[in-house]
Each structure stands twice: as structure tokens, then as C-alpha cells.
Amino acid sequence: MLEMRPDHMKAFEESAIRGFENRMVDHVGQFFPRHLAVLGEPAIRAVIRLGVTRGEAYGFDTEHDLCLYINLMLLLGSLFDEDPQLAWADAILHDTSIPDGAARAERLHDEAMKFHDAAAGEEGEHLTRTLVTLHKHPVKETWRPGPGTLEDRLLAYLRALWPRKCEQVGAGPLGLIIHRGIQAAERHRLAGEFGGALYVVLTFVLGSGFEADPQHPWAAAALQETSASARAGKADLLHGGFMALLAAWLA
Image (cartoon, rainbow, N blue to C red):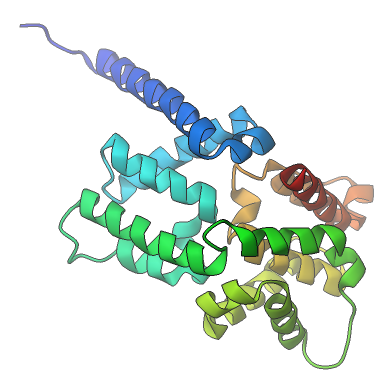
């Protein structure tokens, strides 16, 4: 009987993962062509590899289930499972009453589609309107200090920017991402109210954890910049990366 040594097993598993990755790239090209065109194949492959790791942790051990999970990463952000804006995702992923990975993946996908259609629009029309608004009226030009707390003004800003998503997310989770976003902006030394507002808007639009999302390597590059001149304009670097993404997405 042929025995499979550990090194052979590892090589077999790596080959299987590469095969799945290649098939997923083809899948993305067919069903998410804009993502592939804008983000590029290296970023898509990074998302797929991350999706395999994160999906398997939730018991998704078939190509079908992993494919569904990666689809949602592209729609909602690669770290959507940890996003306070999507509390329903965390609830489904940790619901012990769901019998197996396949049932969990289907439930997750169904709930995500309901959320997406309500917030972004069945054809993505509400999302597109939001992106066009941000492209024509950038945060850097429209955000101005004013009366009231920063948190309250940011909540009003988000509600004006993307009301459909605000309705679906709810005031509590919105308040949480605003609070955490302001704190994160301070940790990253993004200057002033503009830095906090920008970080919150990016979280709202791209998803919590956008700075670690392989779909947005420009964000990590801007926030990790250590040169003295770049640190002073770190918020501008981050804003510039976002504006470049919007221009490519809307082209």
C-alpha cells in the first residue's frame, strides 16, 4: 500500500489550494469582473487565500462553501465577519444550532444578499450613488468642523452620505464604528478632525478592518508610512489612495 509521507501530504494540499485559487480567480473574473479589473489579480489571489483560512475556521470545508464566503468578502469587505456593521454575520457564524458548515454558509449568504440588496440596491444603485458623491465631493473638501460633538456630526454625515445603509445597520453599530474609528485615527496619528472623519468614512464604505484588507493595500501602505514628511500628511496619503480607488471603480 502506498503511504503518504507528511511532506507529500503537504505538497498535495498546497497543490489542491493552488487549483482552487486558480478556479476562484476565473470565478471572480466571471461574476466580479470589476473587482478583478480594479484590484488586480495579485490582490484577488490574496483575498482568496485569506478567505480559505478564515472560512475553514468556521467549518467551511468544501469549495462551494468557501466560494460563497469569498464572494461575501468581495461584497462586504474581507473582514466582514468581525464588522460591527454586520452583526448578523457574527451571529450566524457562531450559531451552534446550525447543523453544519454547508447550512451555515447558505444562511450567511442569504442574509448577506438581503442586506446587500437593501443597503446597496439590487443593482448596486445606492452604493454607486454614494461612491459618485464621494468622488465629486471628497471628504477632504466637504468635512468642516462645526457645533456639537464630533460623533454626532459624523453620524449626520454618514446618514446623508448613504441613508439606505444607515437604515440597515442601525444607530448602535454606527455609533460603535464612529467611536472606534476616531480612536483608530488617533492611534495612527491622522491629524485633526479630518483624519478621524476620513477613517470613519472609509470604515463605513469599505468595511471595518479596511486597513488590513488585501483588497486595499494602499490603505496599509499609507497608515504604515514612517518618514517624517509622510507622517505629517498621513491623512492626505490615505485620502489620495481612496480617491484613486474611486476613480478606477467609477471609470
